[in-house]
Image 1 (tube, rainbow, N blue to C red):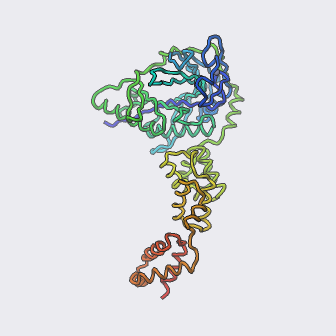
Image 2 (image 1 turned 60 degrees about the horizontal axis):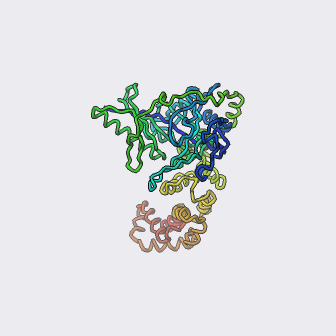
Image 3 (image 1 turned 120 degrees about the vertical axis):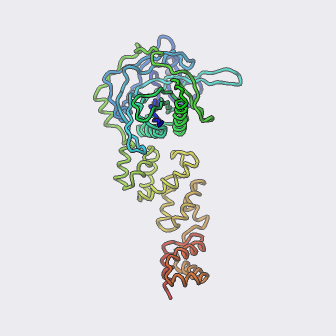
Amino acid sequence: MEYETVIGLEIHAQLKTESKIFCGCSTKFGAPPNHNTCPVCLGMPGVLPVLNRKVVEYTLSMALATHCTIAPFSRFARKNYFYPDLPKGYQISQYELPLSEHGYVDIRTKEGVRRVGITRIHMEEDAGKLIHDERKNVSYVDFNRTGVPLIEIVTEPDLRSAEEAATFTRNLRAMLQYLEICDGNMEEGSLRCDANISIRPKGSRELGVKTEIKNMNSFRFVQRALEYEAERQREILEDGGTIVQETRLWDSAKNATFSMRTKEYAHDYRYFPDPDLVPLAIPQEWIEQIRASLPELPEQKKERFVREYGIPEADAEVLTSSRAMADYYESCVRLFPQAKTVSNWIMTELLRELKKDEREIEDCPMTPEALTGLLRLIEDRTISGKIAKGVFEEMYREGRSALEVVEEKGLRQVTDEGQIRAVIRQVLEAHPKEVVDYRGGKEKLLGFFVGQVMKATQGKANPRMVNQLLREELNRE
Ligand SMILES: [Zn+2]
């Protein structure tokens, strides 16, 4: 039987505000443990939370960017559970009346554009962090993260493969970064992705029993974990077994998911409206003001790149995949206004090196000035395009300028006509038989002669001149 995978995601994004969601404590990462705390985020008796306006503004911007409807009336709810990193014994979240609902994000898949429904986007606070010291067999708690603002983005079960889930998460991260409301760092936990996944016979409309997968802290792990889980479920069903609804953790070292606990249900948390916080009524003018100030988003930027720079859509798609990448490209084009040439070098040479090092464009060792410096040397024929690729690698690895590498290695292109002609004559003399054959009509031997000349000049002869002068010499009887 053929199965179809059904995936819905829950993505938590940490908002880049200066202070926490309900108190004035700093959200800065890396402070000494329990440094960024106060009676409010420590859950002391008698304190009252005050909502951070910036959190609402940031959440609204993401909600509008994903075409969500903003609720005219929403409120916070308490999600009750005990854990040592949660001093109040409840997390302030939103439940039955979230800030926004019913949006969508379009992603590009192998089968074309897929519209992924956004069920809701709501605000909540983060919990603290436990640090386990296994040598002393004790655990410490750090409340610095307690009360750091999060948005939770919940999708409809509209994704049909692990690959689509990874693509969607990438797109969503790009949007958060374009909006400058979340740094999107999955390794540091500022973007966390959980997935609900089930499988069903292809063509069926009923949903299968789902499992929830947690702990996928990179795009690669999102894809690998979900591929693994879909396969695990398929094997169980094919053996006549049943899927248990449960929460499973991804173990990237073992390349497998394993059971963490049976799935909890919403009613287990005894949600109720938080009596300490007033409901939210967002004025329409505020919504319109935020809508008007939304920056150019990935989709719009992509369209503009195609229009303004005349590059193919596939190029524009890659170049707008993150705001940093788009900025890098545009910096290069400003310095060297040949949009397609710049795009080619970024898409092939630069991305290949970055991928090899598992680096993001933000950590690229080559500045736009350096890259365009190299392109200028090709343009003014100081070096050939072929030599430039070797120079590029050197520049990338050693952080040097193109000119430095070219001068040090003596890579300047030979454009002196007399010098090239002399080499050509030597080559023709060394291959009398091929010369006769060429003159007898075997014209494709030209390629052979070009190769010999380039070899004799260590690739430094200007290829166009070599071609032209070779023809002249060969056609001379
Ligand atoms: Zn505080």
